[in-house]
Amino acid sequence: APKQDLINKNVLITAGPTIEAIDPVRFLSNRSTGKMGYALSEAAKSRGANVTLISGPTALKAPAGVEVISVTSAEEMYNRVMEHFKQNEIIIKSAAVSDYRPEIKAINKLKKQEGPLQINLVRNPDILYELGLNKGSKKIIGFAAETDNIIEYAKAKVAKKNLDLIVANDLTEEGSGFGSDTNAVYLIDSSYNIIKIDKMSKLDISHRILDKILDL
Ligand code: C5P
Image (cartoon, rainbow, N blue to C red; front, side, top):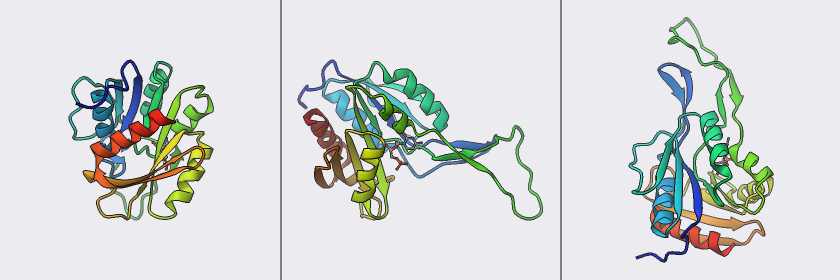
């Protein structure tokens, strides 16, 4: 059995994609499956934590004993995270939040028309950045998925979003990133110490991440 080193700790985890409606039947989203966040929830739960999982739409079953809050859009995720922020001391944001949403959600299904269609996109709130602004003694952990200059971009995000730790994914690496059951990541803390974790299951990666969080 895993060590019980998260007993009485309230851990908030976000997972999955967000989807941004264009009209009642169409949306913008991304390729996140939620596997990393669900694995983190399972790992934290197995170590004794009280886990709240705020999840975008996924095909996954929540681990037993984890409280799941289902959301669709980034704005909805933002609202739920802000509601639960206070009572959690560790917040892990593994969700792939859509950076943009259509400016207007059409009430009726859009009709085909001659020629191109333009959809105006506006920025979504950056949930993690907002959390970082007044995190106090909480531990805030972000994810970064990149195709190039991962370490550099990840360091910049740690600083900009006032994080304690970032988990950086190389999307170009085989067996890493969206949809995969395995991952290979770098853990970078706010002092820019780097731990490289070679390819392993997302559950094993989750335990490494939790070890590092407890070590911060
Ligand atoms: O999209 P980006 O690479 O900036 O994501 C880095 C981290 O910020 C991730 O942990 C992601 O969950 C979080 N994020 C967020 N709200 C956004 C965009 C990203 O919380 N609107």
